[in-house]
Structure formats: C-alpha cells, structure tokens
Image (cartoon, rainbow, N blue to C red; front, side, top):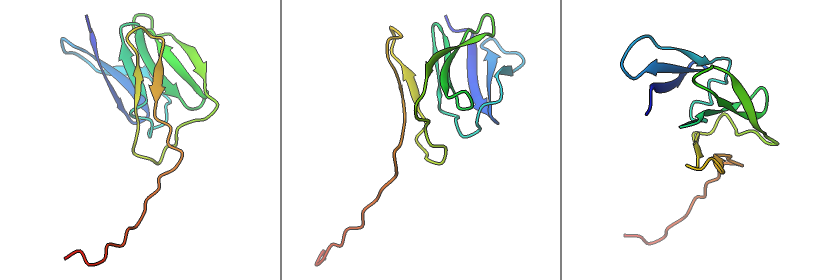
Length: 112
C-alpha cells in the first residue's frame, strides 16, 4: 500500500505522506530539467542522477539510495519528453532518450 506522494520541483524529489503532513526532500541536488525521470514502484523510487550518470533506486524506508545502472548517454535537458517507467517485475526500465528533434515542411499545391 502506498504511503507517500512524490513530487519533483526545483531540482529535488519531495515526498508527502498520503494522510497529510509536511512535505520533505527525499533526494536533492538533481537537475531541475529532469522532472520526469523518476518512477515510483513497490521497491522504491528509481531516478536519474545526472551528475553520477546513473539510474539510482531510493529506499523510502531508510532514505538510502544505490546504483541500479551506469548510463553511457544521458537524456537531453532541453527537449520536452521526460519519462521513465519500470516493469512490474523490475526486470525492465525504460526512459526517454531523444537523439534530436526534426521537422519537415511540406508544400501542398492546389489544395482548395
């Protein structure tokens, strides 16, 4: 059963007790543009630590976090696609990694 609501703002991941009460910092020192790079699961909270170039797992009971995986490439901070999810069995983690944003202009003649 969930006990916390998590919220990301100002470069920190905050948690608030479901029954109400004071919000407090669960993880600080994150990049403010990484607001979508966390996933709450029954084992804890997976999050992107850009400075360490890692995905880490926060244990909400102890407040300790540990490395899940080192990242060769980091997601960009200027794109608007920020997402992370973990499979229910914790075998798969997916996060957005945009190589570039591209667009095309199309000329449509005689469209009336």
